[in-house]
Image (spheres, rainbow, N blue to C red):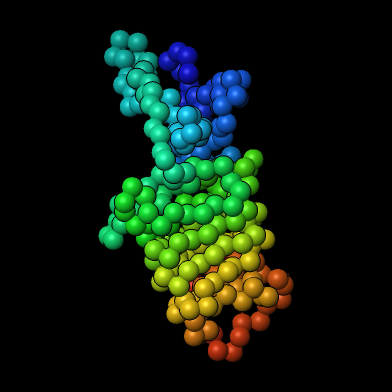
Length: 239
């Protein structure tokens, strides 16, 4: 944080350590997939005065000094606070949850945020690579009956989720939405007209059993495609 050097990763590390020293609950967060092999924007997530907060202390757009040939950039400082543990955006019909910034446990998604209906869980929203939840395990999620869409890889890698409730309102589930959820038991509303969850096999089908949507917790390495299946979704058996 001090000086002109560093980047968002170094700054996040510094802010995290400072928060820990003064007893502020904190963890890492990211806005895109991050790993030891690729970059990504990393930032601290904190709880400040009962609100969720993201802390920015990263380099902005830099310029090259003509006389010295040195790269210099202004440093951005910003704290954004949220009443709920989500970064959000607007889509047709209401709100999309774009990034989860909570601290794990059993998460109950609200049906409304600031008066607007929550209609979509965005791509990678709860994904382990994005939420960076190694230390704060997400163990359960309840989705409200306002949600219509679950995006691609929305829960990718959430290996500690044991129960996830999907209401009858959900019409679309994206590619690889539950890949890597190796402990998952899908609780699908029996009146949902679009999907069927076979927890014994760990497979999510279309309601007519003609499409395999995703193998979220496959129980065997020797799985036989049922005779009535005509289609297999993109990334259904990824990983």
